[in-house]
Length: 638
Image (cartoon, rainbow, N blue to C red; front, side):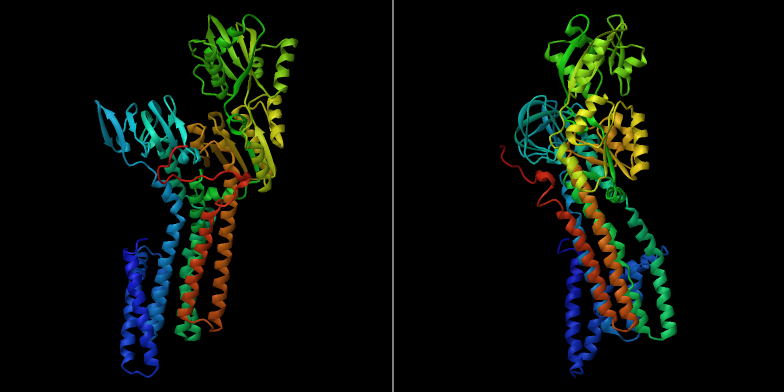
């Protein structure tokens, strides 16, 4: 908040008036008769200046039949003036305004992480049209435009490098603060910064379709989705505030002590209680957004803190998602023939195994024309090639089509699977031509991440995969996973999640592919690997790991638990302070101005407690991983 803002100026004037009021009040008490009227005027001026925003909010809310905290303070101030307690009126308005000002400043700090993210959005893009370079807004860029990026500039589109090379800071997308080299054919993203070099980029995604724009949209939506506790507290305050007005009226009716009744109004303001949940949620979401852990709302952040079991997809989630062909085996004919047929069938597939087959075919100089294939989810593809009906996929696909492996073939396939490899069988004209053995290494951080999750209190860690049981079990054994359910179709993953819910309560699902979307939706919490994940998975999930770094998962779960813990601390503290103040009023040990001072102090302490969440993960992290730093200025390339 700027010093020159309206609220800041009002605060400075109010501070000067309250100081003058106090000096004149003390002078009048010391026997200076002339100071009395001046003190009264100064106190009334303080109440007017500091109280005007309060009164305005109170009457504005009453128009909509809402009796809020401002209304309680307004009633108390009017009552204090009516009974001649001018200093109490001045002190109450000043303290409330000071608390509101400090609260605004502190909450602004809790939003700083989100603001830092929003500030990284590119505001202009240089495109080359008709031989000229034009600077336009990101919303005016078209798919296919050639974008020119110079050193130190933000990249305004998702695209492919056509020409040039340079080092790009991709912290906003990948979470890595070290720049990466990009040259012809490399992929770049909106919101990243070219630190050195020169790039011509063909725009593939523009405007609201870019990865960075979608991240911003998720963060903005998250701030509007409230936690269950937050909703309850807001509902509670709507009934609580009118009840306090009624209680104060009853207290006056029985005690005939107007000052006591007014004091009850002030100290019973539920300010600290109402703000206890939202300020913690905002701080937690902001911290997560800054470090590539996007939570789509306060309700999600609250649920994360109570997860007891986690299910993982295998390929692309627990493994690196970059499988490679380790062996091509032919049972009949040339080895290359089986690979060529497989490449034709997988030509249009986006599955990681399909990409591995196509990469192997390309490395051998094969250029098979992609066939129009029928994708059979979780099993493979069926297509026509060379005048024959062909199948490429798992043994369950062959079983469905009534094709059996011979004893020798079964033995060879089983041997490859026992080594942790995924076997893709190739069939043409009803005959099994051979198989392709593919291996995908486990992510280097996966084993440590599983251990970190256990330390956070996760009771059960399960792998749900469409892969064969032997390959899945080999990966699970390497990583220390409790249970494996293999050979699952998308519906099978959903059914497995239902059984896990029944056994362990709240369950999260972590996945990255299109076939994981049903499971992500069915889980209590869906967590998508955004860096390498599909758009469908990211849209379906409740949480998105912006990069393909699995270690962000334990960081995020730890952050959610810390957020829930801070929320509870704030609520208990606010209730405790309210109880002590109420007891103090009933025994007449708390006056109007002191009650307001304690109330505002409690609000500020609640906020400061929540601000601690912004520092979560700064000094050290699980497994000693490097923290994300948002780029602020161009740095020299390594």
